[in-house]
Image (cartoon, rainbow, N blue to C red; front, side, top):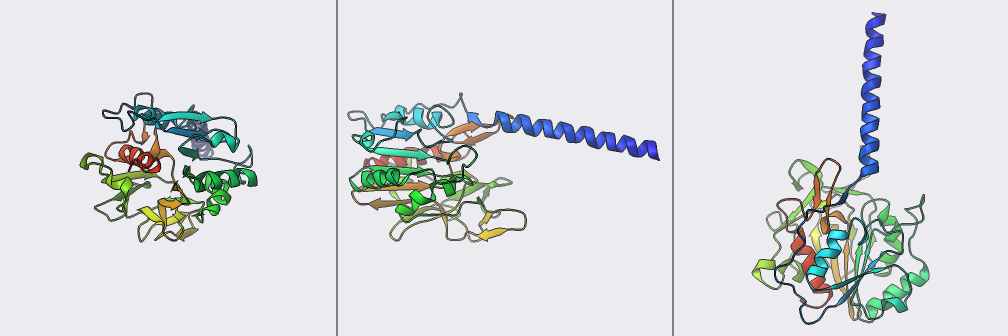
Length: 301
């Protein structure tokens, strides 16, 4: 009996070591840009003019053009936009651009959940939008929601920080892949979802967890959380998210704002096992959604 018990313990220990090794390999390798994703645009929207889009890389951003948002940036360039990395922050540096993209800003290393934006930064961004610029603010699940909440609050947007899930409206078996479609009523009509032509019309968007949001009066909740959606914190702690959103759009001053509570659906990534996350995942219109969002932010629609 003792020998059998020792054998069982040895098997359990081996399995545990293998699992920990796999987890370490998966976490350290992480999701990375899908180099095979086709970013070509057959009919670019910007042929005669090329609005400047600045992609923030100054606030410890988890997603930048040089990393996980490479497909995002290359796709926009294919559509005729002039996409630039913003590597040195200043209010003057925003001048001359049409859109400022901030994706998953974070606090200092080790304190990623802390506010990522100084008061001066926030004032500059609000002034930029008030004056006619557009802001595309993307803040994922924890820790990114809390890092961007103070800036979002300047536009009266509330970020709910946690992990958005919906057991009833999901893509396949995975409740971390949220489905927003015309069929389930969670994809709402807006210039971003209608596009300029029937070919640009968005029918189905899939997001990959993220967080939920609440917008200011007069804003449009474009991706709406279902009646039984919730913000997950642990097995025992869930907060109802019905009526929240994952994407909100609104006018602000002379400018426009789109706030997204999930980052992966706006790019194309693969994990170490080859699983796809984003525009490259089959059966969604995430790519159309992204292009239409930029068309709206640049006042093309």
